[in-house]
Picture: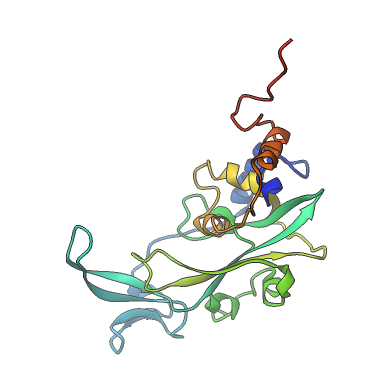
Length: 250
């Protein structure tokens, strides 16, 4: 993991090449998003029985109202709508070594709320309603690799909560699975090192929130300072203080 974090160019791609690829994915996507009244939405409506906005199937999520009372913070009481989605979804990366460096399979994923159509997302980003195909759509790509992963392939497997101010007790399964076999890489997917991903995080609207939350939980292991400095040196970062290798005086 540490070696991947210090690798910023791999498989013939530097950061500028990845940004060009993301831009090409944006240009290839044809999408139109427009605001609509709830009355005009198909299969979504306000339900008197539950006093919430929900889908006809009862799946996906609902918009509920809550009243909050607390002795913490700047306000003692308030009311607000909140997203209620009790399902546990997948936020998962497939990872594989290339040329001795761990790579993460990312997808250029479109979401209707994105300001720039697509952003770099985990390999699998899906709620239970999505991957069980309640919407009658396609099964998410690479789902089987997460569902059929053997214990020794799983590097990370955590339940993490969503933003509690907007979601009601919502959790996702953050998971990283080591690939042992070759796979076909679909057109909107790309292999990137951890170092490349972290560099891309410095750009606006490139790496999405779900990718960031999974990467935040990655284990780097316990390493001596000399090992860390060695990888910094290989990556052109010098001896750990940013000044380059010290030279012996003449």
